[in-house]
Image 1 (tube, one colour):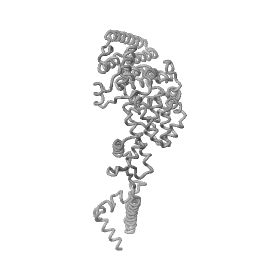
Image 2: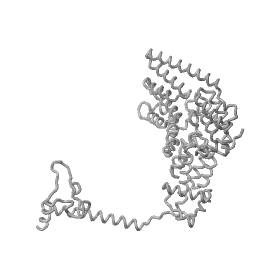
Image 3: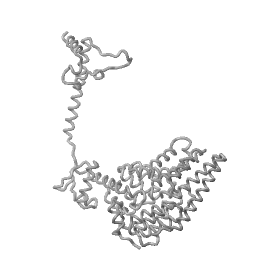
Image 4: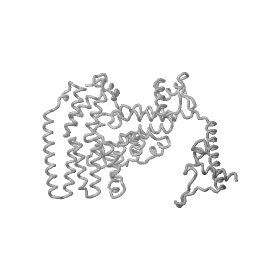
Length: 483
Protein backbone atom coordinates (compact mmCIF):
# COMPACT_ATOMS: atom_id res chain seq x y z
CA UNK A 1 0.00 0.00 0.00
CA UNK A 2 1.46 3.37 -1.07
CA UNK A 3 0.68 6.42 1.04
CA UNK A 4 0.50 9.82 -0.67
CA UNK A 5 2.14 12.94 0.70
CA UNK A 6 -1.33 14.51 0.79
CA UNK A 7 -2.53 12.14 3.52
CA UNK A 8 -3.77 13.75 6.75
CA UNK A 9 -0.73 12.66 8.79
CA UNK A 10 1.85 14.13 6.40
CA UNK A 11 -0.17 17.34 5.93
CA UNK A 12 -0.05 17.82 9.71
CA UNK A 13 3.67 16.99 9.70
CA UNK A 14 4.39 19.74 7.14
CA UNK A 15 2.27 22.21 9.10
CA UNK A 16 4.25 21.35 12.24
CA UNK A 17 7.52 22.05 10.40
CA UNK A 18 8.65 18.42 10.21
CA UNK A 19 10.32 17.26 6.97
CA UNK A 20 8.30 15.19 4.50
CA UNK A 21 10.29 13.45 1.73
CA UNK A 22 8.23 13.18 -1.46
CA UNK A 23 10.91 11.52 -3.63
CA UNK A 24 12.21 7.99 -3.31
CA UNK A 25 15.74 7.75 -1.89
CA UNK A 26 18.54 6.15 -3.84
CA UNK A 27 19.03 3.29 -1.36
CA UNK A 28 17.12 0.02 -1.20
CA UNK A 29 15.35 -0.18 2.15
CA UNK A 30 16.11 -3.84 2.86
CA UNK A 31 19.80 -3.53 2.00
CA UNK A 32 20.08 -0.26 3.91
CA UNK A 33 18.60 -1.56 7.15
CA UNK A 34 20.55 -4.85 6.91
CA UNK A 35 23.77 -2.91 7.62
CA UNK A 36 22.58 -2.14 11.16
CA UNK A 37 21.86 -4.24 14.21
CA UNK A 38 20.09 -3.73 17.48
CA UNK A 39 17.50 -1.15 18.36
CA UNK A 40 18.76 1.40 15.85
CA UNK A 41 17.04 -0.69 13.16
CA UNK A 42 13.65 0.05 14.74
CA UNK A 43 14.48 3.74 15.21
CA UNK A 44 15.63 4.18 11.62
CA UNK A 45 12.65 2.30 10.17
CA UNK A 46 10.28 4.38 12.30
CA UNK A 47 11.92 7.61 11.10
CA UNK A 48 11.65 6.54 7.46
CA UNK A 49 8.03 5.45 7.93
CA UNK A 50 7.02 8.79 9.45
CA UNK A 51 8.98 10.92 6.94
CA UNK A 52 8.72 9.26 3.50
CA UNK A 53 5.12 8.64 2.35
CA UNK A 54 6.22 6.31 -0.47
CA UNK A 55 8.09 4.05 1.98
CA UNK A 56 5.79 4.45 4.98
CA UNK A 57 3.91 1.16 4.63
CA UNK A 58 7.01 -0.99 4.02
CA UNK A 59 9.12 0.71 6.68
CA UNK A 60 6.50 0.65 9.45
CA UNK A 61 5.63 -3.00 8.90
CA UNK A 62 9.32 -3.87 9.00
CA UNK A 63 9.64 -1.80 12.19
CA UNK A 64 6.87 -3.82 13.86
CA UNK A 65 8.62 -7.06 12.94
CA UNK A 66 11.96 -5.76 14.27
CA UNK A 67 10.38 -4.51 17.51
CA UNK A 68 8.82 -7.90 18.19
CA UNK A 69 12.22 -9.56 17.93
CA UNK A 70 13.36 -7.61 20.98
CA UNK A 71 11.91 -6.92 24.40
CA UNK A 72 11.46 -3.17 24.27
CA UNK A 73 7.70 -2.80 24.67
CA UNK A 74 7.94 1.00 24.63
CA UNK A 75 9.50 1.01 21.15
CA UNK A 76 6.83 -1.42 19.93
CA UNK A 77 4.07 0.86 21.25
CA UNK A 78 5.64 3.86 19.46
CA UNK A 79 5.66 1.98 16.14
CA UNK A 80 2.05 0.83 16.57
CA UNK A 81 0.98 4.40 17.41
CA UNK A 82 2.60 5.63 14.19
CA UNK A 83 0.88 2.90 12.14
CA UNK A 84 -2.44 3.79 13.74
CA UNK A 85 -2.06 7.37 12.48
CA UNK A 86 -0.60 6.65 9.03
CA UNK A 87 -2.15 3.24 8.19
CA UNK A 88 -5.31 3.08 10.33
CA UNK A 89 -6.68 0.10 8.42
CA UNK A 90 -3.54 -2.02 8.69
CA UNK A 91 -3.54 -5.21 10.75
CA UNK A 92 -0.57 -3.91 12.76
CA UNK A 93 -2.51 -0.82 13.82
CA UNK A 94 -3.87 -2.84 16.75
CA UNK A 95 -1.44 -3.69 19.54
CA UNK A 96 -0.63 -7.35 20.03
CA UNK A 97 -1.68 -7.56 23.67
CA UNK A 98 -0.69 -11.24 23.92
CA UNK A 99 2.89 -10.45 22.85
CA UNK A 100 3.01 -7.46 25.21
CA UNK A 101 1.84 -9.54 28.21
CA UNK A 102 4.22 -12.36 27.40
CA UNK A 103 7.17 -10.01 26.94
CA UNK A 104 6.42 -8.12 30.17
CA UNK A 105 6.37 -11.40 32.10
CA UNK A 106 9.67 -12.46 30.56
CA UNK A 107 11.22 -9.08 31.31
CA UNK A 108 10.07 -9.18 34.95
CA UNK A 109 11.36 -12.73 35.40
CA UNK A 110 14.73 -11.83 33.89
CA UNK A 111 15.00 -8.67 36.02
CA UNK A 112 14.24 -10.64 39.21
CA UNK A 113 16.76 -13.32 38.32
CA UNK A 114 19.57 -10.84 37.61
CA UNK A 115 18.88 -8.83 40.78
CA UNK A 116 18.83 -12.03 42.86
CA UNK A 117 22.15 -13.13 41.40
CA UNK A 118 23.63 -9.70 42.07
CA UNK A 119 22.56 -9.88 45.73
CA UNK A 120 24.28 -13.24 46.02
CA UNK A 121 27.45 -11.85 44.53
CA UNK A 122 27.38 -8.95 47.00
CA UNK A 123 27.02 -11.38 49.92
CA UNK A 124 30.06 -13.30 48.69
CA UNK A 125 32.07 -10.04 48.39
CA UNK A 126 33.69 -11.08 45.11
CA UNK A 127 34.40 -7.86 43.19
CA UNK A 128 34.64 -9.47 39.75
CA UNK A 129 31.33 -11.27 40.17
CA UNK A 130 29.66 -8.05 41.38
CA UNK A 131 31.05 -6.18 38.38
CA UNK A 132 29.73 -8.80 35.97
CA UNK A 133 26.38 -8.77 37.77
CA UNK A 134 26.01 -5.01 37.28
CA UNK A 135 27.16 -5.40 33.66
CA UNK A 136 24.48 -8.02 32.95
CA UNK A 137 21.85 -5.91 34.67
CA UNK A 138 22.84 -2.77 32.73
CA UNK A 139 22.68 -4.63 29.40
CA UNK A 140 19.30 -6.08 30.33
CA UNK A 141 17.85 -2.67 31.16
CA UNK A 142 19.28 -1.30 27.91
CA UNK A 143 17.63 -4.07 25.88
CA UNK A 144 14.19 -3.43 27.41
CA UNK A 145 14.46 0.35 26.97
CA UNK A 146 14.88 1.27 30.64
CA UNK A 147 17.79 3.61 29.95
CA UNK A 148 17.74 5.38 33.33
CA UNK A 149 18.24 2.15 35.29
CA UNK A 150 20.82 1.01 32.74
CA UNK A 151 22.92 4.12 33.42
CA UNK A 152 22.55 3.57 37.18
CA UNK A 153 23.73 -0.04 36.87
CA UNK A 154 26.80 0.93 34.86
CA UNK A 155 27.52 3.78 37.28
CA UNK A 156 27.54 1.36 40.23
CA UNK A 157 29.70 -1.01 38.23
CA UNK A 158 32.49 1.59 38.23
CA UNK A 159 33.49 0.89 41.86
CA UNK A 160 34.15 -2.76 41.04
CA UNK A 161 36.31 -2.27 37.92
CA UNK A 162 39.75 -3.57 38.78
CA UNK A 163 41.55 -3.26 35.44
CA UNK A 164 41.79 -0.69 32.68
CA UNK A 165 39.94 -2.99 30.26
CA UNK A 166 37.00 -3.12 32.70
CA UNK A 167 36.80 0.67 32.69
CA UNK A 168 36.89 0.72 28.88
CA UNK A 169 34.03 -1.79 28.68
CA UNK A 170 31.96 0.16 31.19
CA UNK A 171 32.55 3.48 29.40
CA UNK A 172 31.62 2.04 26.01
CA UNK A 173 28.39 0.68 27.50
CA UNK A 174 27.61 4.13 28.94
CA UNK A 175 28.36 5.76 25.59
CA UNK A 176 25.87 3.49 23.80
CA UNK A 177 23.15 4.14 26.38
CA UNK A 178 23.81 7.89 26.31
CA UNK A 179 23.50 7.93 22.51
CA UNK A 180 20.11 6.20 22.83
CA UNK A 181 19.11 8.78 25.43
CA UNK A 182 20.33 11.67 23.31
CA UNK A 183 22.50 12.74 26.25
CA UNK A 184 25.38 14.07 24.16
CA UNK A 185 27.16 15.73 27.07
CA UNK A 186 27.49 12.33 28.75
CA UNK A 187 28.83 10.89 25.49
CA UNK A 188 31.56 13.55 25.33
CA UNK A 189 32.40 13.09 29.02
CA UNK A 190 32.92 9.33 28.69
CA UNK A 191 34.93 9.68 25.50
CA UNK A 192 37.23 12.24 27.14
CA UNK A 193 37.75 9.92 30.11
CA UNK A 194 38.94 7.14 27.83
CA UNK A 195 41.17 9.53 25.91
CA UNK A 196 42.83 10.95 29.00
CA UNK A 197 46.54 10.11 29.27
CA UNK A 198 47.50 7.37 31.67
CA UNK A 199 46.82 3.72 32.11
CA UNK A 200 43.72 3.75 29.91
CA UNK A 201 45.44 5.04 26.80
CA UNK A 202 46.58 1.62 25.52
CA UNK A 203 43.22 -0.07 25.98
CA UNK A 204 41.30 2.92 24.63
CA UNK A 205 43.50 2.95 21.53
CA UNK A 206 41.93 -0.33 20.48
CA UNK A 207 38.50 1.32 20.48
CA UNK A 208 39.63 4.65 19.01
CA UNK A 209 37.38 4.28 15.94
CA UNK A 210 34.27 3.94 18.12
CA UNK A 211 35.35 6.86 20.28
CA UNK A 212 35.89 9.12 17.26
CA UNK A 213 32.51 8.15 15.81
CA UNK A 214 30.71 8.74 19.12
CA UNK A 215 32.42 12.09 19.70
CA UNK A 216 31.68 13.13 16.12
CA UNK A 217 27.97 12.35 16.62
CA UNK A 218 27.90 14.34 19.85
CA UNK A 219 29.53 17.38 18.20
CA UNK A 220 27.25 17.06 15.17
CA UNK A 221 24.22 17.00 17.47
CA UNK A 222 25.42 20.21 19.15
CA UNK A 223 25.90 21.94 15.78
CA UNK A 224 29.69 22.13 16.07
CA UNK A 225 30.32 21.02 12.50
CA UNK A 226 34.03 21.84 12.32
CA UNK A 227 35.06 19.78 15.33
CA UNK A 228 32.66 17.03 14.26
CA UNK A 229 34.39 16.92 10.87
CA UNK A 230 37.79 16.67 12.55
CA UNK A 231 36.59 13.68 14.58
CA UNK A 232 35.05 11.87 11.62
CA UNK A 233 37.98 12.36 9.24
CA UNK A 234 40.39 11.05 11.91
CA UNK A 235 38.35 7.89 12.57
CA UNK A 236 40.58 4.83 12.50
CA UNK A 237 40.02 2.86 9.25
CA UNK A 238 39.71 -0.40 11.19
CA UNK A 239 35.96 0.23 11.49
CA UNK A 240 35.64 0.28 7.68
CA UNK A 241 37.12 -3.22 7.59
CA UNK A 242 34.70 -4.67 10.16
CA UNK A 243 32.19 -7.36 9.21
CA UNK A 244 28.79 -5.81 9.77
CA UNK A 245 27.00 -9.17 9.63
CA UNK A 246 29.14 -10.62 12.43
CA UNK A 247 27.96 -9.49 15.92
CA UNK A 248 31.18 -10.85 17.44
CA UNK A 249 33.36 -8.44 15.43
CA UNK A 250 34.59 -5.99 18.08
CA UNK A 251 35.49 -3.36 15.45
CA UNK A 252 31.89 -3.00 14.21
CA UNK A 253 29.84 -0.12 15.60
CA UNK A 254 26.71 -0.69 13.52
CA UNK A 255 24.45 -0.68 16.54
CA UNK A 256 24.94 3.08 16.15
CA UNK A 257 26.55 3.95 12.77
CA UNK A 258 28.14 2.20 9.78
CA UNK A 259 31.35 3.12 7.91
CA UNK A 260 29.16 4.61 5.15
CA UNK A 261 27.64 6.96 7.72
CA UNK A 262 31.11 8.06 8.83
CA UNK A 263 31.95 9.01 5.22
CA UNK A 264 28.71 10.98 4.77
CA UNK A 265 28.80 12.76 8.14
CA UNK A 266 32.49 13.62 7.83
CA UNK A 267 32.18 14.80 4.24
CA UNK A 268 29.18 17.06 4.83
CA UNK A 269 30.57 18.56 8.05
CA UNK A 270 33.91 19.22 6.32
CA UNK A 271 32.23 20.89 3.34
CA UNK A 272 30.25 23.11 5.70
CA UNK A 273 33.16 24.20 7.88
CA UNK A 274 36.48 23.94 5.99
CA UNK A 275 37.94 26.06 3.20
CA UNK A 276 39.28 24.58 -0.03
CA UNK A 277 42.88 24.22 1.19
CA UNK A 278 41.75 22.44 4.35
CA UNK A 279 39.47 20.13 2.36
CA UNK A 280 42.36 19.18 0.13
CA UNK A 281 44.81 18.64 2.98
CA UNK A 282 42.66 17.18 5.76
CA UNK A 283 40.03 15.28 3.76
CA UNK A 284 41.10 14.29 0.25
CA UNK A 285 44.73 13.64 1.22
CA UNK A 286 43.85 12.02 4.54
CA UNK A 287 44.91 8.37 4.44
CA UNK A 288 42.53 7.38 7.25
CA UNK A 289 39.45 8.98 5.77
CA UNK A 290 40.19 7.85 2.22
CA UNK A 291 39.09 4.34 3.23
CA UNK A 292 35.66 5.66 4.18
CA UNK A 293 35.33 7.92 1.14
CA UNK A 294 35.74 4.89 -1.11
CA UNK A 295 32.47 3.57 0.32
CA UNK A 296 30.60 6.76 -0.72
CA UNK A 297 32.24 7.91 -3.97
CA UNK A 298 29.66 10.67 -4.56
CA UNK A 299 30.85 12.44 -1.38
CA UNK A 300 34.42 12.30 -2.66
CA UNK A 301 33.31 13.72 -6.02
CA UNK A 302 31.40 16.54 -4.32
CA UNK A 303 34.44 17.52 -2.24
CA UNK A 304 36.72 17.31 -5.30
CA UNK A 305 34.38 19.58 -7.26
CA UNK A 306 34.28 22.09 -4.41
CA UNK A 307 38.08 22.16 -4.15
CA UNK A 308 38.25 22.67 -7.94
CA UNK A 309 35.81 25.62 -7.70
CA UNK A 310 33.12 23.68 -9.58
CA UNK A 311 30.47 24.70 -7.09
CA UNK A 312 27.43 24.02 -9.24
CA UNK A 313 28.48 20.39 -9.82
CA UNK A 314 29.17 19.94 -6.09
CA UNK A 315 25.79 21.34 -5.05
CA UNK A 316 24.03 19.29 -7.72
CA UNK A 317 25.44 16.06 -6.27
CA UNK A 318 24.43 17.00 -2.75
CA UNK A 319 20.94 18.01 -3.86
CA UNK A 320 20.42 14.65 -5.58
CA UNK A 321 21.04 12.90 -2.23
CA UNK A 322 18.90 15.24 -0.12
CA UNK A 323 16.12 12.66 0.19
CA UNK A 324 18.54 10.03 1.48
CA UNK A 325 20.01 12.34 4.10
CA UNK A 326 16.61 13.54 5.30
CA UNK A 327 15.89 9.92 6.21
CA UNK A 328 19.03 9.60 8.34
CA UNK A 329 18.56 9.37 12.09
CA UNK A 330 21.33 11.84 13.00
CA UNK A 331 21.49 14.07 9.90
CA UNK A 332 17.85 15.01 9.46
CA UNK A 333 17.62 17.85 11.96
CA UNK A 334 20.92 19.40 10.85
CA UNK A 335 20.71 18.91 7.08
CA UNK A 336 19.13 22.30 6.37
CA UNK A 337 21.88 24.17 8.22
CA UNK A 338 24.62 22.02 6.68
CA UNK A 339 23.36 22.63 3.16
CA UNK A 340 22.94 26.35 3.87
CA UNK A 341 26.53 26.68 5.08
CA UNK A 342 27.87 24.72 2.12
CA UNK A 343 25.94 26.90 -0.36
CA UNK A 344 27.01 30.04 1.52
CA UNK A 345 30.66 29.10 1.22
CA UNK A 346 30.22 28.34 -2.48
CA UNK A 347 28.55 31.71 -3.12
CA UNK A 348 31.27 33.52 -1.13
CA UNK A 349 34.02 31.86 -3.14
CA UNK A 350 32.20 32.55 -6.42
CA UNK A 351 31.71 36.24 -5.56
CA UNK A 352 35.31 36.99 -4.45
CA UNK A 353 36.70 37.99 -7.91
CA UNK A 354 33.80 40.36 -8.68
CA UNK A 355 32.77 43.79 -7.46
CA UNK A 356 29.22 43.32 -8.78
CA UNK A 357 27.22 40.37 -10.08
CA UNK A 358 23.66 40.29 -11.35
CA UNK A 359 21.17 38.16 -9.49
CA UNK A 360 20.31 36.46 -12.78
CA UNK A 361 23.94 35.33 -13.20
CA UNK A 362 24.06 34.01 -9.63
CA UNK A 363 20.75 32.21 -10.06
CA UNK A 364 22.02 30.58 -13.25
CA UNK A 365 25.32 29.57 -11.65
CA UNK A 366 23.65 27.97 -8.63
CA UNK A 367 20.60 26.50 -10.38
CA UNK A 368 17.94 28.62 -8.64
CA UNK A 369 15.40 31.26 -9.59
CA UNK A 370 16.10 34.93 -8.86
CA UNK A 371 13.59 35.20 -6.03
CA UNK A 372 15.09 32.22 -4.17
CA UNK A 373 18.60 33.55 -4.74
CA UNK A 374 17.56 36.97 -3.42
CA UNK A 375 16.19 35.40 -0.22
CA UNK A 376 19.32 33.30 0.20
CA UNK A 377 21.63 36.29 -0.25
CA UNK A 378 19.55 38.33 2.21
CA UNK A 379 19.86 35.57 4.80
CA UNK A 380 23.63 35.37 4.24
CA UNK A 381 24.04 39.14 4.65
CA UNK A 382 21.96 39.16 7.84
CA UNK A 383 24.08 36.35 9.28
CA UNK A 384 27.23 38.27 8.25
CA UNK A 385 28.32 35.41 5.99
CA UNK A 386 28.55 37.79 3.03
CA UNK A 387 29.89 41.35 3.11
CA UNK A 388 27.82 42.82 0.28
CA UNK A 389 24.69 44.81 -0.60
CA UNK A 390 21.75 44.01 -2.86
CA UNK A 391 20.56 46.62 -5.34
CA UNK A 392 16.93 45.64 -5.86
CA UNK A 393 16.41 48.27 -8.58
CA UNK A 394 19.13 47.02 -10.91
CA UNK A 395 18.97 43.46 -9.48
CA UNK A 396 22.70 43.46 -8.72
CA UNK A 397 24.81 42.18 -5.81
CA UNK A 398 27.45 44.77 -4.89
CA UNK A 399 30.57 44.11 -2.84
CA UNK A 400 31.46 46.50 -0.04
CA UNK A 401 34.76 48.12 -1.06
CA UNK A 402 36.93 49.45 1.73
CA UNK A 403 38.07 53.07 1.48
CA UNK A 404 41.84 52.66 1.72
CA UNK A 405 42.52 56.40 1.83
CA UNK A 406 40.12 56.90 4.72
CA UNK A 407 41.71 54.02 6.63
CA UNK A 408 45.21 55.50 6.14
CA UNK A 409 44.04 58.93 7.35
CA UNK A 410 42.37 57.42 10.39
CA UNK A 411 45.48 55.42 11.33
CA UNK A 412 47.71 58.48 10.82
CA UNK A 413 45.53 60.63 13.11
CA UNK A 414 45.55 57.95 15.77
CA UNK A 415 49.33 57.65 15.63
CA UNK A 416 49.70 61.46 15.84
CA UNK A 417 47.47 61.64 18.92
CA UNK A 418 49.36 58.81 20.61
CA UNK A 419 52.70 60.50 19.83
CA UNK A 420 51.44 63.87 21.12
CA UNK A 421 50.21 62.33 24.36
CA UNK A 422 53.49 60.46 24.95
CA UNK A 423 55.58 63.55 24.21
CA UNK A 424 53.45 65.69 26.52
CA UNK A 425 53.85 63.22 29.40
CA UNK A 426 57.62 63.02 28.92
CA UNK A 427 58.01 66.81 28.89
CA UNK A 428 55.85 67.05 32.00
CA UNK A 429 58.03 64.46 33.74
CA UNK A 430 61.20 66.29 32.81
CA UNK A 431 59.88 69.63 34.12
CA UNK A 432 58.79 68.02 37.40
CA UNK A 433 62.27 66.57 37.90
CA UNK A 434 63.84 69.94 37.09
CA UNK A 435 61.58 71.54 39.70
CA UNK A 436 62.81 69.07 42.33
CA UNK A 437 59.62 67.03 42.40
CA UNK A 438 59.78 63.21 42.20
CA UNK A 439 56.99 60.65 42.45
CA UNK A 440 58.27 57.41 43.98
CA UNK A 441 57.11 54.40 45.97
CA UNK A 442 59.86 53.53 48.42
CA UNK A 443 57.66 51.18 50.40
CA UNK A 444 57.50 48.66 47.53
CA UNK A 445 60.88 47.70 46.11
CA UNK A 446 60.84 47.39 42.36
CA UNK A 447 57.60 49.33 42.00
CA UNK A 448 57.50 51.68 39.06
CA UNK A 449 54.93 54.41 39.48
CA UNK A 450 53.83 56.42 36.47
CA UNK A 451 51.70 59.51 36.13
CA UNK A 452 48.75 57.42 35.07
CA UNK A 453 49.11 55.07 38.11
CA UNK A 454 48.69 57.98 40.54
CA UNK A 455 45.93 59.60 38.56
CA UNK A 456 48.04 62.27 36.84
CA UNK A 457 46.76 61.94 33.30
CA UNK A 458 46.19 65.30 31.69
CA UNK A 459 44.43 63.76 28.71
CA UNK A 460 41.78 61.75 30.58
CA UNK A 461 41.34 63.70 33.81
CA UNK A 462 39.50 66.73 32.50
CA UNK A 463 39.98 70.08 30.81
CA UNK A 464 41.97 71.88 33.53
CA UNK A 465 45.06 71.00 35.51
CA UNK A 466 43.03 71.11 38.73
CA UNK A 467 41.25 67.91 37.69
CA UNK A 468 44.39 65.81 37.68
CA UNK A 469 46.97 67.46 40.02
CA UNK A 470 46.69 68.91 43.47
CA UNK A 471 46.93 72.67 43.99
CA UNK A 472 50.07 72.33 46.13
CA UNK A 473 51.98 70.42 43.46
CA UNK A 474 50.71 72.83 40.82
CA UNK A 475 52.10 75.81 42.76
CA UNK A 476 55.45 74.10 43.31
CA UNK A 477 55.63 73.17 39.66
CA UNK A 478 54.91 76.76 38.52
CA UNK A 479 57.51 78.10 41.03
CA UNK A 480 60.12 75.67 39.75
CA UNK A 481 59.44 76.55 36.13
CA UNK A 482 59.83 80.29 36.88
CA UNK A 483 63.09 79.60 38.65
